[in-house]
Image (cartoon, rainbow, N blue to C red; front, side, top):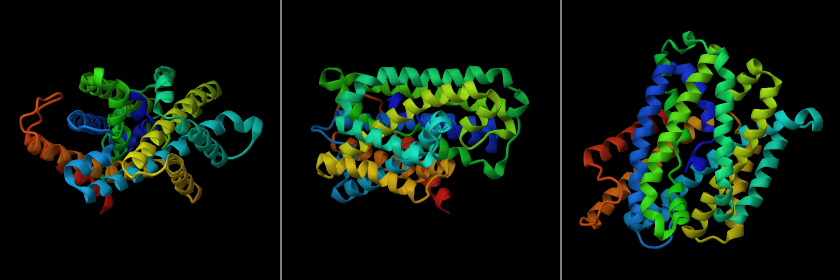
Length: 364
């Protein structure tokens, strides 16, 4: 779960914090983390009480009907495609930082190279990648520890003061994107298998807690180190302060991590297209990777804009769908045993209201 969720969204968090005010950004991040943890537990409850092999659209179809299932598949696909574009933006920048001095070329071509490598891994499937995740997550955690410790000597707590109410909601979409990852629940259930699937709720809570702490520390330390010089992609601003050694090490570790997460998201989308839309494996893989490549090629390359829009709109839509699906499951199976949490109706409606408000504000 950590490997699927922690990704390029974290590089937009410091900029969002710096624009709105670090304290306000941190409060928004913590509030969203609590809501998304509850939503993940609702989705996990649905997955554990539903027979058969499904992904999000399949679960929605089972409880809300065919049309809602199709709508969920479309929303999930666009959300994941947006995520993959963001991974290409950051991954291309990382690879460019490593190889441009010796091989030349622009970030554009390195982003396409990253997508090509990921396509080969996506075709291999989840079990192949799952075996590598312990290594990848370890590299990922080391990357963020390396960045934070390297930035600590440059920290000034004066940079953490102030609030800009005009940009108060900027951290909402970015944080929602960074914390999102609903589609990973079925993959977690598949990896655990029937023997260990009862550990799914504990895995959700542990992972979401670790991710939230990581994001909070990373966002605050980078803003404290860079202050008003915090860039849209935190890496760029840190290179100016921390130097070339940081640039090479962080870019190398970041490239490996982004490749892994791009692959996991691609597998998630491929499986949705295979199991819920019933496409062939080759066509599903081609669509999963081909659409973000086309979007990137035709100019969708502004990181924070991508993160904010995808998080607020598509993340919000999927959050509301999960709440509705959980509600319908409770009506159909009123006497089932709770494996996760018994979440009160007022809390469920509150979560849906937050997501609806975020969608409205982002669009209008």
